[in-house]
Picture 1 (cartoon, rainbow, N blue to C red):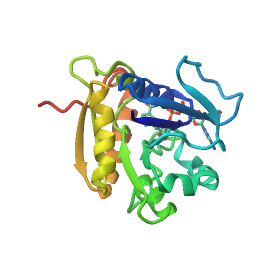
Picture 2 (cartoon, rainbow, N blue to C red):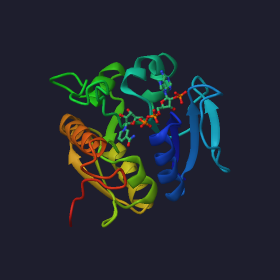
Picture 3 (cartoon, rainbow, N blue to C red):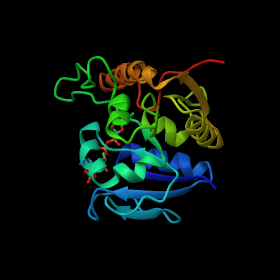
Length: 206
Ligand SMILES: NC(=O)c1ccc[n+]([C@@H]2O[C@H](COP(=O)([O-])OP(=O)(O)OC[C@H]3O[C@@H](n4cnc5c(N)ncnc54)[C@H](OP(=O)(O)O)[C@@H]3O)[C@@H](O)[C@H]2O)c1
């Protein structure tokens, strides 16, 4: 059975937990602290940051700025797993720019911080949480775009997405994360400005 650990128990943590549950995976949720808010669901295994990671796939459902502190606990454990970076480091004080390194991406920076050969996959960042929870953007099945350098890791991520009833599209190597982050940024600011709905999102027609 696929096993998924999700670090972070906010909006995206809950949405991806729902995806993993639909896919029939076992789910571990590691909260920032015992007092971090999260709806407890039967069947999920809950812990706090610092507890051992149980899953083969690990989703970092925290702000990009929290990565260095997470790696203090988990750098070595993550090296043996598929690490899913979902971040869109938007400057929420202006809603006008991404805080990704100008010639790189959060995913590439994460790969650089992990031991060489760590399998980082960029995924789910071009999906608003509601469209993952429901599996639809209102008119079509939710499409999840993903990028990475390791075929086995990408196969595992695609398997999870498809088992949850969504469409998985491999957009290429991890260098494509830069474009995915730009798309994620655009989608979120359009929703924040009221030009689209949070239950909606980019669709890729067959
Ligand atoms: N919201 C979306 O639709 C969306 C879409 C695509 C991508 N994303 C990306 O998904 C990620 C999570 O966003 P979100 O919307 O789920 O945010 P959120 O609802 O604010 O949840 C953030 C989670 O991260 C935890 N956290 C914050 N700082 C931490 C730290 N230093 N160490 C450990 N945990 C920490 C929070 O814990 P506490 O509860 O204790 O504060 C909370 O569980 C972000 O990178 C964002 O860019 C979001």
